[in-house]
Each structure stands twice: as structure tokens, then as C-alpha cells.
Length: 372
Length: 258
Image (cartoon, rainbow over the protein chains, first blue to last red):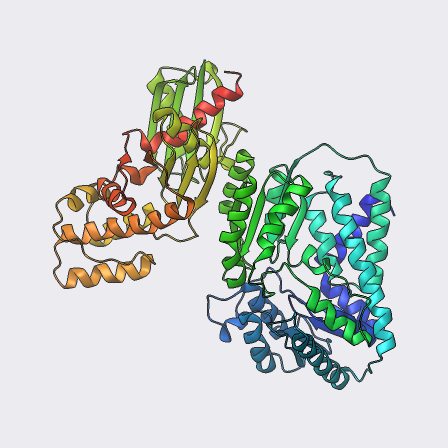
């Protein structure tokens, strides 16, 4: 496939996850939903099921409002809305981690709102670095394995987990390499870039890696398009067509990101150390850093954003703040401070899953472009 | 060289024609913004005011909420960029601009050359905007243009919420029921807008000189309340509502090759 055909394929998957899920179900695979921000997908994969990202969607919210107040993360609300309306029918279970207050709430609501899809909690420790934190993480994974066995009838094998870890590490490496390759190809739009990341949630990672590797090769042989204004994005999600379209209209190019649904997913590999492969996976969570929902009293993430922007040649940092996301809001002043210290302009726009009018965001982004 | 700036807001349309990017050759301001006949009529009015025709214009830039719907030109710029240019032209020493328009509030930080350093916009919320004042003036049955005079006569401003227009509306009705003097209610309303907007400005950082732009700048009650809230004098120009259009005309002049 050439570059355009590959980008079309990513688009197809990103735009229609339900069709992708149906394909897996028809092939006899079990599908297990994985809620934001981090779930032990490797475990689900190793047991023979398809980990399927469930980050909500840009839809109108009605049914979920029975369970949530108005001022709560719309990713969670839309996730529940899709669940209630049957958009995830056929899934064997949903794994929801406990990484923020909204995620803790949805787990309890899910049990009553979507009883047909069993809820599996993944309770992570606040202090993930010390040995007791690693042991706590491992115990959480053991609970997930046990619940997955009940929900799917599939069994866990540590050796199979080792194979899945290799698949995921290879995907991480491909995605990290892709970011650099895309930065050198401004002709790939921000919307297309978003499709690549989004499609990763709806495909088996070995299949996605194959497509990403093919794209890296195809772009390597292609001539780079005219230069645009390079920027960095940060936030939880940045996949709304209305938003990426505005960035494209304004001649801005995302050359690196710190978006939870994008590069943050692929920043940390599972290490080689560890007595068993499950121990290795617990150590992966220990090693993870630089994310608003991962406790770090030094808030090194904020300085890293400024450093990454500088290293990638980004002329500015666009903070895409998901409405009512406390962890991200707490980090914003520190991100601004760190970028100010490096002389990197920062602007913030608020987004949620129910935006139909992006005019205010357009004004902010156009002005940001003028500043750059 | 004559250039035209068109500022199509949510409630009004403003036009300015600049001669050689400096002298105001004509201006117009009409009630009726995006989606109305206001923008087209405003263009007709400014041409008449400047005694010019379209053929005399070397460039046109549209700005404001309705900039992308403007049929007069295919050149647009964000209202923040244009307000910065316009304010800097009128007040070269200005470093902080507070722009309160019909449906939003914005704060802009400038350097000595008039370049934008940073900006902040309000949330999608009527509190702290011209719409808030419209709603309150409607409840009080006072023309919105007279709010400043009422506030100036206040002895003890009433406490009105700055969080939400709907809540504030209910509070104003309660104040009316308690027979609070109209002047004190209006002063409380102006203080409510000022509190909301000054929070936004303080988040960005306020450096003197500070000026106001946008339609709400005409309201002396809000201006004085902002001065109290920020602890800074606020520069005012009768042209404040035209800053966006002035900036657009200046940008058109720059694009036309000065």
C-alpha cells in the first residue's frame, strides 16, 4: 500500500470502531473493552482476547446523565452513554482503571447501567515506585486475570504473556519512531495523524504495528511536503475532527505530543527484569512517569513537556484541556511556567466530547498561530 | 492608500477605513452582527462616511466572530490579533488589553512593539460579558447605555454573583424585591463583571498600561469597577469599540504592502 492507501486504512478503522469490533467478533475472538488511561492490555492479549479501546466518542449525552452530574469528564459520560445504548454489545467485559476520580465513579455506575458487560476494576497504587507499590500493582493484575477468566472463559499463561509483551513493546517502538517520521512530513495532516493514533485502540497491536511500519517505510521513500508551523500538543484527548481540522486550516503541524490517548500510551516499554512476566508488567507500571494521572510530587512532566517541545523544534505548546479534568488542570500552571522559562509560547483551549461549535477554539488557535 | 477593517461581532458590526494605515478616514457602527444585514450596511455606511467607493480600497480584512462569513473579503484575522493592533495604534504604551465584547471576554498581553505575547479567553459562559449586562439591563428595564450613569450614583454597591448569569439574574430580582436602590444594584452588576474579568486578567498577568476595548468599554461603571479590582487605572478611548476594526484595517494596510 502507498502512503495514501495506508492513511485511508487508518481513517477507516478510526472512524468506524464498531465495524472493527464486529469483524473481530465474527472471527470468533472475544473482545474486552479497555477504558482510559492505562490498562494491562498485554494480559488481555495474552489470554487470546482483543483489547479494544473505550475512550468514549463525540456524541450527544442523554442516558448517561442519569448517572452523572453535569460537571464531570465527558469522556466518561460518553463511554457510559455508548455502553447504555448498546454500542459495545458483544464485548465480554470492560476493564476500568482507578487512575482518577471520574474513573473510580464510572466503574460503580457501569455495573448498574450496563449489566450485560461485566466491569473489571484495575486498582492501581498511588505510590507505584516502592516494592510494596509494585506488589499492589501485581495483585491488581491478578484480580484482573481472575475476573477475565470468569467473564471470557479464557485462561492465563505467563509464557503467553511474555509473547504479548514483545508484541506491545514492538508496537511502542513503532509508534515512537512514527512520531519523528511524521514530524518530517508536514503533508500528513493533523487529522490523519490523529487517525493513526486512534486506530491503535481498535486493532490488535501486531496488526497495527504492521501498518505503522509500512507507513514509516512509505514515508521514508516519499518527498516531504511544504513546511508548516510546528507545534506540540498536550492533553488527554485530541481526536475531535473539528479540532484537528482547525489546526490544519491554520497551517499548524503537530511535531510531537504529550496527549494521553496518543504518545503517552507508548512512552514506556515493559522491562526485561522480573521473575515472571507478570512481575515484568508490574514493573512497567512502576517505571511509567510523566502523566497527569500518575502521582509525581516533583511534577517532572511539566518540565519534560517544555524540553520535548524544544527538542522537536515546536514553536509553541497547545494545551488541549478536557473540561472538568482535575489532574490536567492542576498541571497547567506548571506547564505554562516551564514553557515560559524556555521562551516557548503556550495557549490553552478547552474541549469536551459534546462540542459542536469550535469557533471559540478557532479564534484561540488562529491567534496562537499569529503569536508564533 | 485606503484600507478597510470590518469587525463582525455577535451583536454589532463595526467598520473603519484607514488612510495609509494611520488616519481614520471613516467609521461606522451598527447594531446587528453575524447573520444579520448589519455587516453589509456597516460597509455601506463607512464608505459613505469616508466619501469613498470600493474601488478606492487597497485591502480589506474581516475580523470578529463573523469574520469567516464575511462576503466582502477572503482575508480574515482573529479579533485578538486585530484588537492588539488597534489598541497599540491608539495607545502605544499599552501592555494589557481587556476586551469585553457581546458574548466573550479576552485579555491580551503586548510587548513594547505591540506584539502579542499571550492571551486568555473566557469560558463559554455569559458571565463577565456584554450579554450579562444586556440581561441585567433588561430585568431592570434600564437602557444598557445608561448602566454606567446609574453605577456612578451608587453609595453602597449590592453583592451580585460573578459565577453565573442565571444565578445573578435571580439575585438581582431578590435585590429588587428587597427594595435595594437601583443605583446600588447596577453598581453590583458592574462589579460582578469586573470581578470575573479581572480574575482572567490576573491569571495572564497584568502589566501597565491597561486599556479596555470592545463594546463594554463604553460602560464607565464596569471600567471603574475594573480599576478597583485590578488596582490599576484603565485607559479609555471613545474609539474602544472600534479597536478591532481599526486593527483589521491596519492589518489590511500591512498586507497591502504598506
